[in-house]
Amino acid sequence: MNLVIPKEIRKYIDNQNFQIDLIGKSKAKKMILDDCVLKIESSSDEVKNEVLMLNWWNNYHLPVPEILENIQVEGINYLLMEKLKGDPSYEVIVRRSTEDLIELLADSLKLLWNVDITHCPSSQLLEDKLAAAKERVEKNLVDVNDAEEGTFGEDGFNSPEALWDWLDNNRPEEEKLVLSHGDFSLPNLIASGSYLTGFIDLGQSGVSDIYQDIALCYRSLLDNLRGKFGVLRTYTEYEVENYGKLFFQKIGIEPDWDKIKYYILLDELF
Image (cartoon, rainbow, N blue to C red):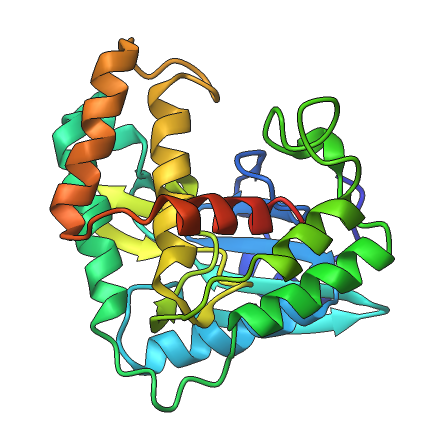
């Protein structure tokens, strides 16, 4: 990895072992060191939002990494954070049980829903998300090859522009606002045993509709149970569907499938 790391960062990481994290969809390079994590990526509004929200979450004593240093050099952002103890939450399936994982996911969602959002500094309302999505579409930043099967192509939308138009014309009538992680997928929750130790990757965090996180969490859960990212254990489709039902029972919400579809499609533009 041929990177010139600023001296302000090197003082923390010199002589530490590291590995490169390849999990997830993030375009950032992540160096996982002995006691910290270095995230390197081009400066952007999302990067600025992550720093903003990490500080805000920490002020509210929510479980996220503490920022050790944040430096920008020639358009590149170097974000050094403490390393959370534990593993990505999907490991709970292997080390404990699927039921324990679903309990952890439900408790983690409820933790965010109980936060007072009055002074939250980041707005991720649907209007904001659609504006950001449109900018990504116009700048040709949407990778259609990274989308869910069927989103684009013969059985889906002709283009990201067509998807954005559909989203704009089919906005849900109302938003129930909560604190949202923004990318509530299993790799972005860190767990020890069956307990949450923290959240990572807060670039899209802010005030948003409750279904922003529900939809992405539900999709991530089912994708992992179906072995999309590697087989954790083998499930029948009947079991997958029943675990999906258990998820909604645990969060105490009757699923609004139209909103779930909407927010999953919206995420395809990010």
